[in-house]
Length: 217
Image (cartoon, rainbow, N blue to C red):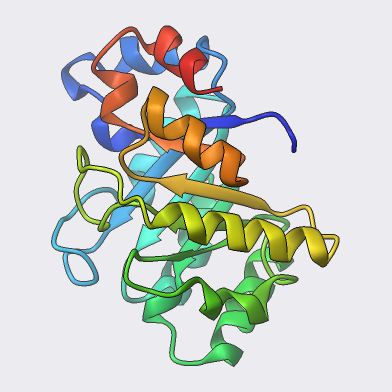
């Protein structure tokens, strides 16, 4: 297993101290910055658009991990890629069929970017099996997407373990990312199951940022 990548989620950043906290993240040892996009339809919350991503891109050289929890990921893909996304992850649940999923993965790759796909807690991991060769990142949501600060759903661990086993059997090196309720305890569980990218928001931004990042790595 490769070294663990920690991806602080800017959803939990203190925006009254944005520059200060972003600088702390840049110096924390984190490799990715996780950027949650919500449209108020697929999930019951609104967050950031492409222009906000441009601001973070100016303030950080970290790998920009954009996770869109929106109903029209195809429509917005090029907009977020142009704004600075290094990885563009969309949700399985909003896509019409397998062909549309393959198509969007191809569009992302045609722009030279990493492609990701995510599933909600109630979606079985088996839906991802036809797409193992299409994606660079598989994001397992370990809370219901929409809001930060939720408790980790233990059933996510079996999904991570199964997905990593499939990837290993296929000789694929894709990342298995997990988002939701990650702290020093749950981090150990998901890493043991095969996750190598850990997204954390409130756990990182509500204490010493560097110490929090190091405790997850």
